[in-house]
Image (tube, rainbow, N blue to C red; front, side, top):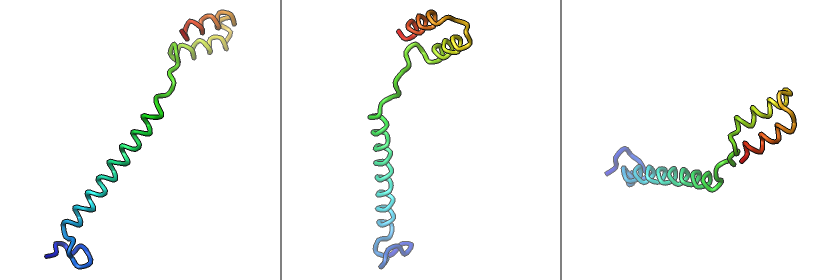
Length: 81
């Protein structure tokens, strides 16, 4: 008996649809796991010590001339510890 006329002789029926759906589901899950595995092995981006925002503010203050070179390097070392 053929349901919906799938297959050359109609012999696949719902089993053919179920097999195709299962194949694509397994394929999709495998691709998701592969991408997650690659992303995890790449690791996180290196962390900026002392917080990036504070160091950016310090650099801007030095560029504007608000602090001296010696003070800039001293504060930068403190932020990176």
